[in-house]
Length: 206
Image (cartoon, rainbow, N blue to C red; front, side):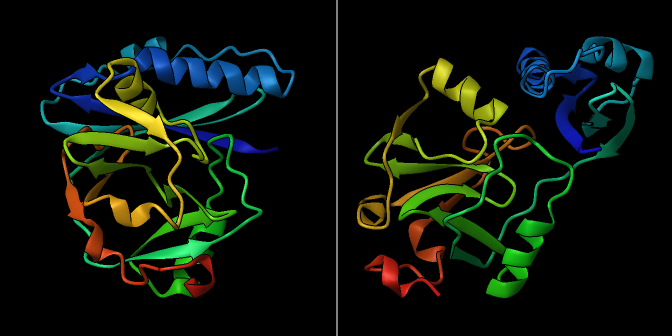
């Protein structure tokens, strides 16, 4: 049976975006026609986590509502190597625990991290949604693979806007950042030039 994963930010004993994580879990069960018995708030409460600092709560679960948890100290890290990788068939609409496809793409690209291009459009990195800066406004691609909780929260707060970002207009943006449940808005920002195989056309992606 397929297993799914939620990675939830805990900082100084406070849990973040729990409602959006619960919504995603609910939608996963509903899509596969199963009953959801997972209450993330109760799971967190039962952990009795009383440590200050930044932690990742990792919940792996299946569609029978069986789950296992882990609380892991978390530290931000920056990247030095990012490449564009084309994959026109990739589907990651649900947050599956099995992420071998992403590891395979990174290994093939021989890159520390990748930005996935699907049908000429920018989607996500291997582990995060993306934001791109034009002038003073941040935008997120409307061709995402997974509608992450941080992405949803930033759109709701109107800190970012959604737009079409493809290989042709990518050069119009000056900077980008990766966001996910653990990495918030403007935590780590990269110049667009850090992308090693920045193309002029889609044919230039290997």
